[in-house]
Amino acid sequence: MSSEKRKIAYIDGKPYEISANHTSILKFVKSYVGEKKVPTLCDDPNLAPYGACRVCSVEVALQKDGPTKVVASCHTPVAENQHIFTSNENLQNLRKNIVELVLTDHPMECGTCEVNNNCELQDVANDLGISDHRYNSPKQHKGIPKDTSHDYMRMNLDNCINCGRCVRACDEIQGSFVLTMSGRGFESRITTDNDMMFGDSSCVSCGACAHTCPTDAISDVFQSKSAAVDKKGKNYMFLLWSWV
Ligand code: SF4
Ligand code: SF4
Ligand code: FES
Image 1 (tube, rainbow, N blue to C red):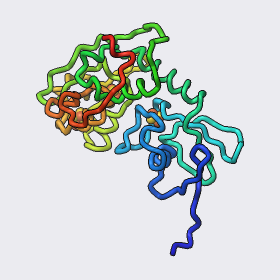
Image 2: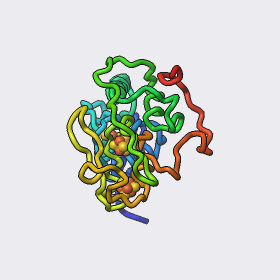
Image 3: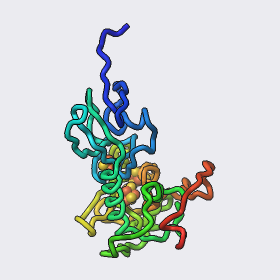
Image 4: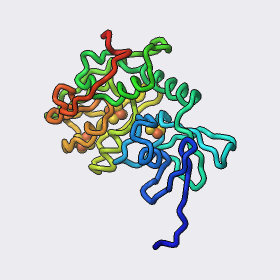
């Protein structure tokens, strides 16, 4: 028997053992209390932690009843005796605010979107009960034309939420470094090679970017994420999008 001392951390007051594969608070929480306990947008378990969107925020205290700090769970290591709080009014408000800000620059046209009912952004917004748009249209449509120049891949950057997952998938999984996040703020956008059309770029059509994209901003012509071809038969609640 191993003489190594078991390390414990607490999730919402209950103790759980930390194991070697719990490389972040998010992984620790997911493994014990379920995939959907903490929402995420920029995280993909197949990619290195990034910590950009903060939707995965949790509160952590270093001792019982001690002061808490809000941290992004996807890139914060879990440590012995941490007290992790996954859900309370503050966290719910923070997550809602973040997702509403993301939606200020995302067209509200789910009814006509290819991935309607099979979209991570739609899931997260629905789960947070976002039923209205409180931040009125600083720039709700980027107006970026669709790029259909590639034989196998499509770009519809009007639906991009700048999570950076495609850039990291292309770098970390494929090693191709085709995609870049260019510009700042509302002007940020994904570009291919030196701002080439997708079809003229050095893309090798592996599909890793489309696979990780949480919306339909990058898609694979032969691997549609349309719910019409999704055999999982998910049951969705429609809030904000149902009227479109
Ligand atoms: S399909 Fe092209 S752009 Fe996308 S990850 Fe693969 S090589 Fe990169
Ligand atoms: S194209 Fe998709 S994966 Fe890439 S930054 Fe935009 S939303 Fe994220
Ligand atoms: S999912 Fe953790 S910061 Fe985006």
